Image 1 (cartoon, one colour):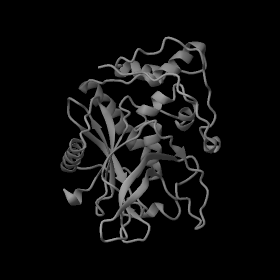
Image 2: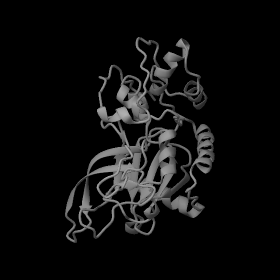
Image 3: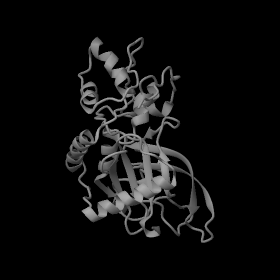
Image 4: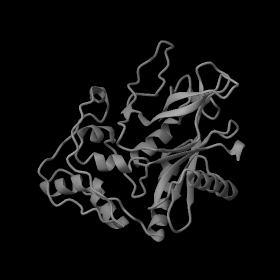
Length: 308
């Protein structure tokens, strides 16, 4: 399997990024000998990403590493999945650990949604799956692979669109791709007119899945409108305690610790890692403490177990 390599992307200037925690960016020019786009083993991928910075010899690796899309064998996938599961246990205090029966149900629902949307899994990767069922309101991280078993690593409660409230939409189901056609941003941590930090504390990641059609939750006739589908944290004082029940205007609210985990490990950032090679704006978005997994993906899957 081969992968194309993106080069000479025009640099974007995005003023809103200047105040985020990742605004300090170093750009290197004139580096040759980039990856030829061939799939990379887990060991090679980890070696390059974990190489110490600060020397000329590492500049090429720093720029070429994001171009390397690993294609892990099932045994390597299992090793990386176990590493991520251990990291989840240590980094996410709100972690949910589904039973074996629940894991099988999650995998079945996600597989079905992917099949309905004609989305094929071509390499081992992480998927972010959300069940908008009002009685479930849960996110799970799932390892999907073209051959070999799928695995549920764990998850957290979330909040999706609240029904029966004017101006609030029902979070749409489907498969949503996170790629470099849209630039994410980070929360400023500022208060709105209701003294609410709607996107959470300063620096929290906001994943942008673009304009999507969603049902207007305050109408009974099924009328739809367009919303900007985002996944983000929320106000730790006034709104975080509502996570676990429908409470958003249509976006997906996640706990702060899961937000940090998905961000730090590049769960949805495989395309951003590619774009960051030659675009300072994407490099500014990626966190300074990034520990990108070789299973980085680009896909959010929203299901509703009450409709299955």
